[in-house]
Length: 321
Image (cartoon, rainbow, N blue to C red; front, side):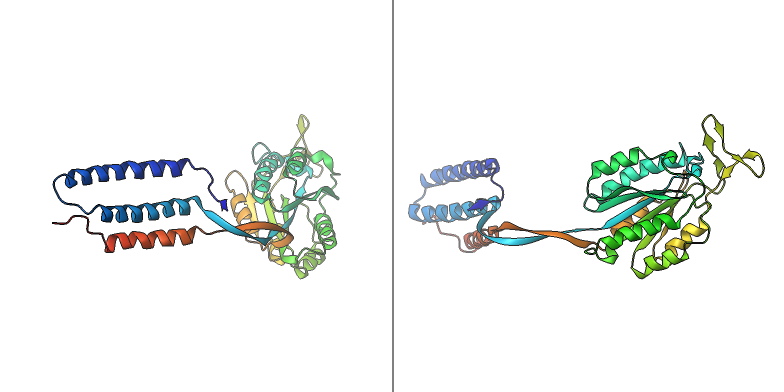
Protein backbone atom coordinates (compact mmCIF):
# COMPACT_ATOMS: atom_id res chain seq x y z
CA UNK A 1 0.00 0.00 0.00
CA UNK A 2 1.25 3.48 -0.91
CA UNK A 3 0.36 6.53 1.14
CA UNK A 4 -0.26 9.86 -0.56
CA UNK A 5 0.68 11.73 2.64
CA UNK A 6 3.29 9.59 4.43
CA UNK A 7 4.05 12.28 7.04
CA UNK A 8 2.48 10.75 10.17
CA UNK A 9 2.90 13.73 12.51
CA UNK A 10 -0.63 15.02 11.87
CA UNK A 11 -2.02 11.50 12.33
CA UNK A 12 -0.30 11.18 15.70
CA UNK A 13 -1.52 14.60 16.80
CA UNK A 14 -5.12 13.82 15.91
CA UNK A 15 -4.89 10.41 17.59
CA UNK A 16 -3.51 12.04 20.76
CA UNK A 17 -6.30 14.64 20.79
CA UNK A 18 -8.92 11.90 20.32
CA UNK A 19 -7.39 9.79 23.08
CA UNK A 20 -7.25 12.72 25.49
CA UNK A 21 -10.85 13.73 24.88
CA UNK A 22 -12.07 10.17 25.17
CA UNK A 23 -10.24 9.76 28.47
CA UNK A 24 -12.15 12.80 29.72
CA UNK A 25 -15.36 11.12 28.53
CA UNK A 26 -14.47 7.87 30.34
CA UNK A 27 -13.63 9.77 33.51
CA UNK A 28 -17.04 11.45 33.46
CA UNK A 29 -18.60 8.02 32.86
CA UNK A 30 -16.67 6.68 35.86
CA UNK A 31 -18.11 9.44 38.06
CA UNK A 32 -21.61 8.58 36.87
CA UNK A 33 -20.93 4.86 37.46
CA UNK A 34 -20.20 5.52 41.13
CA UNK A 35 -23.78 6.74 41.60
CA UNK A 36 -25.77 4.80 39.02
CA UNK A 37 -25.94 1.24 37.73
CA UNK A 38 -24.22 1.21 34.32
CA UNK A 39 -24.08 -1.59 31.75
CA UNK A 40 -20.35 -1.65 31.03
CA UNK A 41 -20.53 -3.93 27.98
CA UNK A 42 -22.66 -1.34 26.17
CA UNK A 43 -20.06 1.29 26.94
CA UNK A 44 -17.44 -1.04 25.43
CA UNK A 45 -19.50 -1.41 22.23
CA UNK A 46 -19.84 2.37 21.91
CA UNK A 47 -16.12 2.80 22.47
CA UNK A 48 -15.34 0.18 19.83
CA UNK A 49 -17.66 1.87 17.30
CA UNK A 50 -16.15 5.31 17.81
CA UNK A 51 -12.63 3.97 17.74
CA UNK A 52 -13.36 2.18 14.47
CA UNK A 53 -14.62 5.17 12.52
CA UNK A 54 -11.95 7.46 13.96
CA UNK A 55 -9.23 5.08 12.73
CA UNK A 56 -10.94 4.96 9.33
CA UNK A 57 -10.93 8.77 9.22
CA UNK A 58 -7.19 8.77 9.91
CA UNK A 59 -6.55 6.20 7.17
CA UNK A 60 -8.57 8.26 4.68
CA UNK A 61 -6.61 11.36 5.68
CA UNK A 62 -3.32 9.58 4.91
CA UNK A 63 -4.52 8.84 1.36
CA UNK A 64 -4.07 5.06 0.89
CA UNK A 65 -3.34 3.92 -2.68
CA UNK A 66 -3.96 0.27 -3.48
CA UNK A 67 -2.82 -1.23 -6.78
CA UNK A 68 -1.03 0.46 -9.71
CA UNK A 69 -1.73 1.11 -13.37
CA UNK A 70 0.14 2.57 -16.36
CA UNK A 71 -0.99 6.05 -17.41
CA UNK A 72 0.01 8.01 -20.50
CA UNK A 73 1.16 11.57 -19.80
CA UNK A 74 0.95 13.86 -22.84
CA UNK A 75 3.21 16.90 -23.10
CA UNK A 76 1.73 19.85 -24.98
CA UNK A 77 3.35 23.03 -26.21
CA UNK A 78 3.52 25.72 -28.86
CA UNK A 79 6.22 26.91 -31.26
CA UNK A 80 6.85 30.65 -31.15
CA UNK A 81 9.35 32.66 -33.19
CA UNK A 82 10.19 36.14 -31.90
CA UNK A 83 11.34 38.38 -34.77
CA UNK A 84 13.11 41.50 -33.44
CA UNK A 85 13.89 44.58 -35.51
CA UNK A 86 17.49 45.66 -34.84
CA UNK A 87 17.67 48.61 -37.22
CA UNK A 88 19.29 51.82 -35.96
CA UNK A 89 15.90 53.37 -35.22
CA UNK A 90 15.47 50.88 -32.35
CA UNK A 91 18.06 52.94 -30.44
CA UNK A 92 15.61 55.85 -30.26
CA UNK A 93 14.93 57.05 -26.73
CA UNK A 94 11.24 57.98 -26.91
CA UNK A 95 10.87 54.92 -24.63
CA UNK A 96 13.23 54.87 -21.70
CA UNK A 97 16.03 53.94 -21.60
CA UNK A 98 15.72 53.09 -25.33
CA UNK A 99 13.46 51.00 -27.54
CA UNK A 100 15.86 48.05 -27.76
CA UNK A 101 16.72 48.07 -24.05
CA UNK A 102 13.04 48.17 -23.10
CA UNK A 103 12.27 45.28 -25.49
CA UNK A 104 15.07 43.18 -23.99
CA UNK A 105 13.65 43.70 -20.50
CA UNK A 106 10.07 42.91 -21.53
CA UNK A 107 11.03 39.82 -23.55
CA UNK A 108 13.00 38.33 -20.67
CA UNK A 109 9.83 38.44 -18.60
CA UNK A 110 7.61 37.28 -21.47
CA UNK A 111 9.51 34.07 -22.25
CA UNK A 112 9.23 32.99 -18.61
CA UNK A 113 5.48 32.59 -19.16
CA UNK A 114 6.11 29.94 -21.84
CA UNK A 115 8.60 27.59 -20.21
CA UNK A 116 6.75 24.59 -21.65
CA UNK A 117 6.87 25.90 -25.23
CA UNK A 118 9.63 26.11 -27.81
CA UNK A 119 10.77 29.65 -28.55
CA UNK A 120 13.19 30.87 -31.21
CA UNK A 121 14.74 34.28 -31.95
CA UNK A 122 15.12 35.93 -35.36
CA UNK A 123 16.94 39.26 -35.69
CA UNK A 124 16.53 41.44 -38.76
CA UNK A 125 17.01 44.76 -40.44
CA UNK A 126 17.89 44.75 -44.14
CA UNK A 127 18.59 41.00 -43.67
CA UNK A 128 17.33 38.36 -41.26
CA UNK A 129 19.30 35.84 -39.21
CA UNK A 130 18.45 33.01 -36.82
CA UNK A 131 19.81 34.14 -33.47
CA UNK A 132 18.43 31.14 -31.58
CA UNK A 133 16.59 28.12 -33.06
CA UNK A 134 13.42 26.82 -31.46
CA UNK A 135 14.31 25.59 -28.00
CA UNK A 136 12.85 24.75 -24.59
CA UNK A 137 16.03 26.00 -22.89
CA UNK A 138 15.14 29.19 -21.02
CA UNK A 139 18.76 29.85 -20.03
CA UNK A 140 19.89 29.90 -23.66
CA UNK A 141 17.07 32.28 -24.58
CA UNK A 142 17.95 34.64 -21.74
CA UNK A 143 21.60 34.73 -22.84
CA UNK A 144 20.65 35.59 -26.43
CA UNK A 145 18.26 38.29 -25.24
CA UNK A 146 21.00 39.83 -23.11
CA UNK A 147 23.24 40.15 -26.16
CA UNK A 148 20.75 41.89 -28.48
CA UNK A 149 22.01 45.15 -30.00
CA UNK A 150 21.67 47.02 -33.28
CA UNK A 151 25.24 46.15 -34.30
CA UNK A 152 24.37 42.49 -34.91
CA UNK A 153 22.80 43.06 -38.35
CA UNK A 154 23.45 45.26 -41.41
CA UNK A 155 21.57 48.54 -41.18
CA UNK A 156 20.60 49.63 -44.67
CA UNK A 157 16.83 49.74 -44.29
CA UNK A 158 14.24 47.24 -43.06
CA UNK A 159 13.09 44.17 -45.01
CA UNK A 160 10.06 42.91 -43.14
CA UNK A 161 9.47 39.95 -45.44
CA UNK A 162 12.88 38.45 -44.56
CA UNK A 163 12.12 37.39 -40.95
CA UNK A 164 8.62 36.24 -41.85
CA UNK A 165 9.99 34.07 -44.68
CA UNK A 166 12.66 32.67 -42.39
CA UNK A 167 10.14 31.78 -39.69
CA UNK A 168 7.85 30.15 -42.27
CA UNK A 169 10.70 28.02 -43.65
CA UNK A 170 11.71 26.88 -40.17
CA UNK A 171 8.12 26.03 -39.31
CA UNK A 172 7.80 24.00 -42.54
CA UNK A 173 10.67 21.81 -41.35
CA UNK A 174 8.65 20.93 -38.22
CA UNK A 175 6.34 18.46 -39.94
CA UNK A 176 5.00 17.02 -36.70
CA UNK A 177 3.72 20.33 -35.34
CA UNK A 178 0.18 21.44 -36.11
CA UNK A 179 -0.41 24.80 -37.76
CA UNK A 180 -2.50 26.22 -34.94
CA UNK A 181 0.39 25.75 -32.49
CA UNK A 182 2.72 28.06 -34.45
CA UNK A 183 2.92 31.82 -34.16
CA UNK A 184 5.28 34.74 -34.73
CA UNK A 185 5.84 37.77 -32.53
CA UNK A 186 6.95 40.61 -34.81
CA UNK A 187 8.62 43.46 -32.89
CA UNK A 188 9.44 46.71 -34.66
CA UNK A 189 8.83 50.44 -34.84
CA UNK A 190 7.30 49.89 -38.29
CA UNK A 191 9.56 52.26 -40.23
CA UNK A 192 10.70 51.61 -43.83
CA UNK A 193 8.74 48.38 -44.27
CA UNK A 194 7.78 48.94 -47.88
CA UNK A 195 4.86 46.99 -49.32
CA UNK A 196 6.49 43.73 -50.42
CA UNK A 197 5.11 41.57 -47.60
CA UNK A 198 1.74 40.72 -49.14
CA UNK A 199 2.87 37.35 -50.54
CA UNK A 200 4.42 36.12 -47.31
CA UNK A 201 1.45 37.13 -45.15
CA UNK A 202 -0.81 35.25 -47.56
CA UNK A 203 1.33 32.11 -47.17
CA UNK A 204 1.33 32.44 -43.39
CA UNK A 205 -2.44 32.85 -43.37
CA UNK A 206 -2.91 29.78 -45.59
CA UNK A 207 -0.85 27.70 -43.15
CA UNK A 208 -2.69 29.02 -40.10
CA UNK A 209 0.36 30.78 -38.66
CA UNK A 210 -0.61 33.96 -36.83
CA UNK A 211 1.57 37.05 -36.52
CA UNK A 212 1.26 39.08 -33.34
CA UNK A 213 2.75 42.50 -34.04
CA UNK A 214 4.24 44.63 -31.27
CA UNK A 215 4.75 48.29 -32.17
CA UNK A 216 7.55 49.90 -30.16
CA UNK A 217 7.81 53.68 -29.86
CA UNK A 218 5.60 56.75 -29.89
CA UNK A 219 3.96 58.86 -32.58
CA UNK A 220 6.03 61.87 -31.42
CA UNK A 221 9.26 59.91 -31.82
CA UNK A 222 12.75 61.03 -30.90
CA UNK A 223 16.30 61.43 -32.21
CA UNK A 224 18.45 58.35 -32.82
CA UNK A 225 21.68 58.34 -30.83
CA UNK A 226 24.89 57.20 -32.54
CA UNK A 227 28.02 57.21 -30.43
CA UNK A 228 28.32 60.64 -28.84
CA UNK A 229 26.15 62.24 -31.54
CA UNK A 230 22.94 61.62 -33.42
CA UNK A 231 22.01 60.14 -36.80
CA UNK A 232 21.56 62.90 -39.37
CA UNK A 233 18.80 62.87 -41.99
CA UNK A 234 20.66 63.33 -45.34
CA UNK A 235 17.66 65.11 -46.86
CA UNK A 236 17.53 67.87 -44.25
CA UNK A 237 20.98 67.72 -42.61
CA UNK A 238 19.11 67.74 -39.29
CA UNK A 239 18.96 65.03 -36.63
CA UNK A 240 16.70 62.22 -37.89
CA UNK A 241 13.45 61.67 -36.02
CA UNK A 242 12.18 58.09 -35.65
CA UNK A 243 8.45 57.64 -35.06
CA UNK A 244 6.26 54.61 -34.55
CA UNK A 245 4.58 53.67 -37.84
CA UNK A 246 1.88 51.22 -36.84
CA UNK A 247 -0.14 50.90 -40.07
CA UNK A 248 1.91 48.12 -41.65
CA UNK A 249 2.24 46.28 -38.34
CA UNK A 250 -1.53 46.31 -37.95
CA UNK A 251 -1.97 45.18 -41.57
CA UNK A 252 0.39 42.21 -41.18
CA UNK A 253 -1.40 41.13 -38.00
CA UNK A 254 -4.85 41.40 -39.57
CA UNK A 255 -3.83 39.53 -42.73
CA UNK A 256 -2.69 36.54 -40.64
CA UNK A 257 -5.61 36.62 -38.17
CA UNK A 258 -3.26 37.83 -35.45
CA UNK A 259 -3.41 40.93 -33.27
CA UNK A 260 -1.55 44.20 -32.89
CA UNK A 261 -0.14 45.52 -29.60
CA UNK A 262 1.90 48.54 -28.57
CA UNK A 263 4.66 49.25 -26.10
CA UNK A 264 5.62 52.70 -24.87
CA UNK A 265 5.88 54.57 -21.58
CA UNK A 266 2.15 55.33 -21.82
CA UNK A 267 0.82 52.15 -23.47
CA UNK A 268 1.97 48.79 -22.13
CA UNK A 269 0.16 45.90 -23.80
CA UNK A 270 2.65 43.11 -23.12
CA UNK A 271 0.16 41.40 -20.74
CA UNK A 272 -2.41 41.41 -23.56
CA UNK A 273 0.15 39.87 -25.91
CA UNK A 274 0.89 37.13 -23.37
CA UNK A 275 -2.82 36.40 -22.99
CA UNK A 276 -3.27 36.16 -26.77
CA UNK A 277 -0.39 33.68 -27.04
CA UNK A 278 -1.73 31.62 -24.15
CA UNK A 279 -5.06 31.31 -25.95
CA UNK A 280 -3.32 29.67 -28.91
CA UNK A 281 -4.07 25.97 -29.06
CA UNK A 282 -1.09 23.79 -28.16
CA UNK A 283 -0.11 20.53 -29.85
CA UNK A 284 1.20 17.28 -28.39
CA UNK A 285 5.00 17.43 -28.40
CA UNK A 286 5.56 14.05 -26.73
CA UNK A 287 4.17 11.45 -24.37
CA UNK A 288 5.44 9.05 -21.76
CA UNK A 289 4.04 6.19 -19.71
CA UNK A 290 4.17 6.45 -15.95
CA UNK A 291 3.14 4.04 -13.22
CA UNK A 292 0.27 5.59 -11.29
CA UNK A 293 -1.37 4.41 -8.10
CA UNK A 294 -5.08 4.88 -7.36
CA UNK A 295 -5.95 6.76 -4.17
CA UNK A 296 -8.69 4.78 -2.37
CA UNK A 297 -9.30 7.22 0.50
CA UNK A 298 -12.95 7.62 -0.51
CA UNK A 299 -13.88 4.07 0.50
CA UNK A 300 -12.42 4.45 3.99
CA UNK A 301 -14.06 7.85 4.36
CA UNK A 302 -17.42 6.48 3.24
CA UNK A 303 -17.34 3.64 5.78
CA UNK A 304 -16.25 6.05 8.52
CA UNK A 305 -19.12 8.41 7.73
CA UNK A 306 -21.55 5.48 7.80
CA UNK A 307 -20.35 4.38 11.22
CA UNK A 308 -20.46 7.97 12.44
CA UNK A 309 -24.08 8.32 11.33
CA UNK A 310 -24.88 5.01 12.99
CA UNK A 311 -23.35 6.34 16.21
CA UNK A 312 -25.60 9.43 16.00
CA UNK A 313 -28.85 7.76 14.96
CA UNK A 314 -28.61 4.58 17.01
CA UNK A 315 -26.93 5.52 20.28
CA UNK A 316 -26.35 2.73 22.74
CA UNK A 317 -28.15 2.94 26.05
CA UNK A 318 -25.43 3.09 28.65
CA UNK A 319 -27.37 3.85 31.83
CA UNK A 320 -29.97 1.52 33.33
CA UNK A 321 -32.36 3.15 35.80
